[in-house]
Length: 529
Image (tube, rainbow, N blue to C red; front, side, top):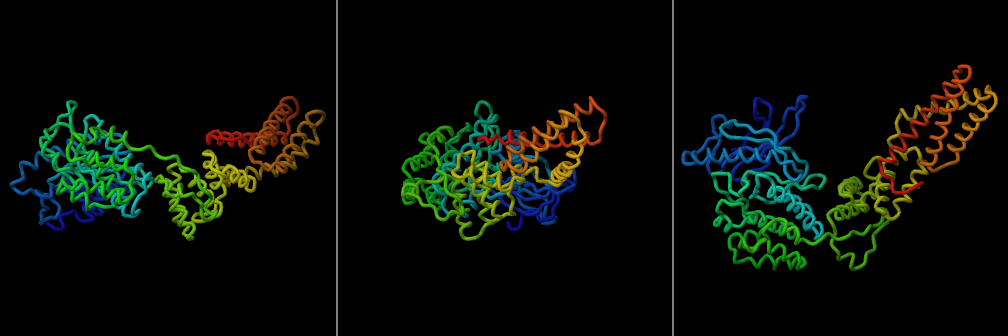
């Protein structure tokens, strides 16, 4: 039947949730993007899953909201909804970044619903389409994360089989994290590995499960069912093709098509053997656990640092060119291409995604963007921060860039200090130098000489020392000296307003120095000044 989704603007749970649009549907449910009113009455985007059996439910045409069941399916529908709610309650207790967060569970309109976190990003299918073909290291990293996510389900208590691991049900978030979504077909198993549900599992997306598995299923936990899906996803990531998956789904005798297609894509034999073992038609010939699958994956390559974005084309050896790159490096390379073509904003976005995955070259490139104001507002402090982060990984030239930019723009070496308040404090200090010197002339003996020496040292330090950290350190010593000497003179001699002023100035400089070196400590600097 057509147009059976909830219309935009439909509200649920007494107006708490408002439907924006439907974003997906499967055999047992429809998923919507919705708004939820928070405690502050500010709408927050969420997702809502509605139980809706494609072959047994229909929408009441009177109100366009109520879910009805065809008579022949009514008994099954009661059990299906019970399973739906029970398994969602189990999922709600899973605390893992790999698994979508479940919120509210409620009954309404003759069916059941649950809410989920709204994830910024795209599903794996759209991700593969956008990047066309993903290179080997990136594909291995991606499938490793997907397998780790499935492992969370398999090792949970109770254990879960997802049973619908398809490109539409794997989300790649904005920071390139992997999150499994849509547990409409998932099944929970007790501590004895027995199915908790009274309803047997149902196959998900064609090509991403093995029909034969459902013929032999006897109610016992069978991780190989999801392992087949992981192998199918790995194949899809490397080839971008679903046709062979569908052919083998319809005719398992065509199994050899997997290896043939992968070899045409120049996939290494060790990767092909992993995929073929995961996709074996017979359960006993597959990996028996996800841990076994993960152990068979090759280790990631050690990445080599690359040159600056603005440094022109990189010269690579033939071996370097043929070597496979990690996902983070791939993002960085794409960013460099955009940068060369003058699309600085897109380049900046890709560098940021790569840097969030701790890739040193991307951090360096972000420093270049901030320093030059390409793709982002010019900010020397943030440029220094990214150069510093790249230097921690010993990226070539990053330390020199950091030192150069902080020498040329010392006010931004600690970018948090570049605020109106800091400026006013500095102005207050410098305006105080003249009356301080005047006041010192009234002093007698050693105290006047000491205070004069502190002021002279302060001026010399501020004017002569370009290195910001060294300057800050010596100013801290001067500030402490101002405080100590003026406090001593106030205690032992007549009260003087200018000495109070000196004391306050000393406190300000000492505090700023302490704040700066606390910042350095938190940033965990790897090199000395």
